[in-house]
Amino acid sequence: MIKKNKIKIKLNGKKIIIKAGSSLKDLILNLNIPLNKTAIELNEIIVDKKKIKNIILKKDDKIEIVHFIGGG
Image (cartoon, rainbow, N blue to C red):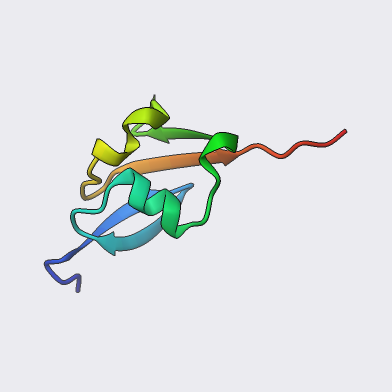
């Protein structure tokens, strides 16, 4: 049972529970992912990283985060 202050989302194919009212930026910061090396998709739409603090996550949102790693 999920409490009222929690919601389920899907992150990179895995269901997770987060605090209701969390922004996409909150999620990224909690995951310790550097924004400058990521691509973020929310419900199959690529997100402008300049707007992530204004995007509030909702129940059943699907987020895909790709982290780029340099090398050769």
